[in-house]
Length: 292
Figure 1 (spheres, rainbow, N blue to C red):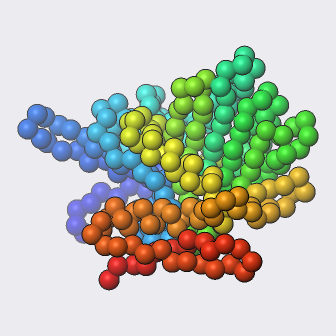
Figure 2: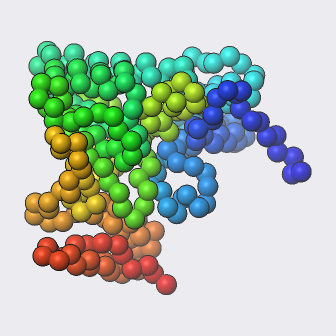
Figure 3: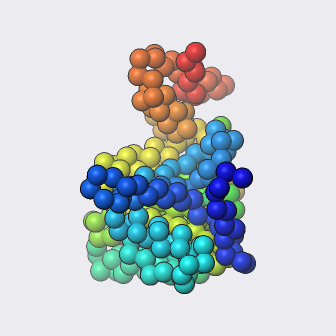
């Protein structure tokens, strides 16, 4: 009724990518802005999920986004993309290639490591590639909130894989991929979990984080999540998830993020941490008081 052109996507594929493209006529010509995210454009889930996004005017990435929109609206065939990786055509191959590269680096004595934060990990080819990487000496850290078919700490198979899950006040929903790449780390955000449905039956996006400040921030997010010893559980050799015992200061990653974001949004407000007492343990810094 308002004049918007609604397109329902590609028949047989669920559009799960989160993209918003703005085209503006500015003084120096036409400029495109692209937002890419790990989460939905939905006010309800925005209050309940943890997600990350990128707003960019990088001409290469925005052109990739425009090409994807052309494909989704039936204007073109699936495009060749410069920086973005997209399902259902290229993402699965990309993930396998990145894992194989880390495996090769480990075999030649170069720095090699993988970090992935996902909702689910069930793709058998990816799991097998991770096992091969572990056996080559790649240090692998996985944060998988939900379904996971990988087994960590299996002698001779996955001794170099550590698998954890965080279940807290908010639903962990962001997808982060980090590859050490012989000391030249590559970081990506994505809408996709490592599942066959995401790789082959959905439209998904994976995008690089290249700005130095953004990369530093994302590494801080990874470090904070991995340091969580309040809401995190770790898979052991018996395939059960055991609560991590705080070694020093208890860390609730979601509470820390909430505190930091509240301070950034309202710096004039004194943010008072809520102290959560656990029987027989140190006091844990939980959420924060909300300003009036």
